[in-house]
Image 1 (cartoon, helix red, strand yellow):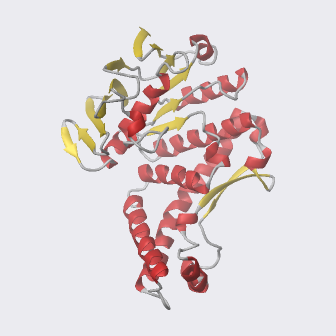
Image 2 (cartoon, rainbow, N blue to C red; image 1 turned 90 degrees about the horizontal axis):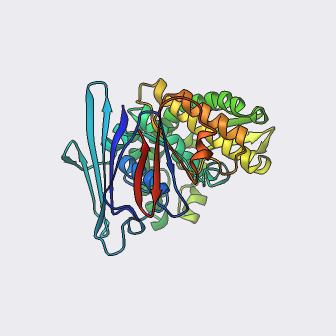
Image 3 (cartoon, rainbow, N blue to C red; image 1 turned 180 degrees about the horizontal axis):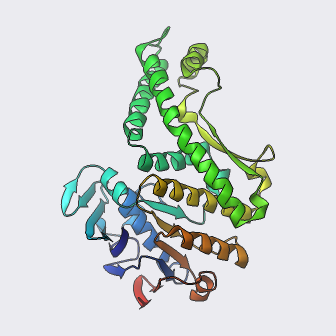
Length: 361
């Protein structure tokens, strides 16, 4: 299934723009500030309900307008699905699937999985562990049916334990401590095999993109020191947790650590190598999802040539083409993309001052 029709209204500088996308490569070209990245942002909004460029809705919505809207049609073999998202300046969110209002983003995210590679991609490696947990958990969401309920259960217990710690209400081993320990062990047990799959596929893909990445290793850290159980760690650390007012160990501190010969990859890899490593991570994510029966995700690639030389940009395009996924890529000039992407179905769109026009379909 792929995204065939896209309607964008009042998202930044795009008003009532309609695109018919192809199932293969879709090139979006235009000058800086033209609105090409906003197209990727709109697709992300349709999938996740959020922008990858801002944490609030206000910057998304055109000035003086009360709301912005994104609608899309997904098509597959004898199947089609209509999705819609409206974000209001007030903060309200309206979601629709096949014209029917839904209360949760789960249905949208399940119907339209996306994988983003943008200009801040290297943050996934050099940034805070939260970004890597989000990467792992977004994969978990699609491939492990038990994950979401378990994640919610753990974080509810964690909030209760932290509240008790701050109020001085937890002495000894309370029920909330037991719940944090129990649900945390289950959550980590669900994460670990998926993390191992991501690591294996990452290693293979990274080497394919560049031999210089052959020594890069990706490993899962559960968020506490093993072989101790989480219950043991929480018991030993209770006094310190109480004095600091929060739980210092558990799945909320988990990480995917990337190292090169024992050193943090963020300290060793060049900016170009970091971007290639992120591409390998995202390709591994897509591969795990497809292997587990999920529809191939839509790759959203912003400014492909940033920090990559020609041969490596071509290698990335070759990798994306091999996934069989729908891909939407942006660049300033058409030539920049077509010299990297060889063969396959291609659609080209020009964006100028908020107006999108197809060059060919």
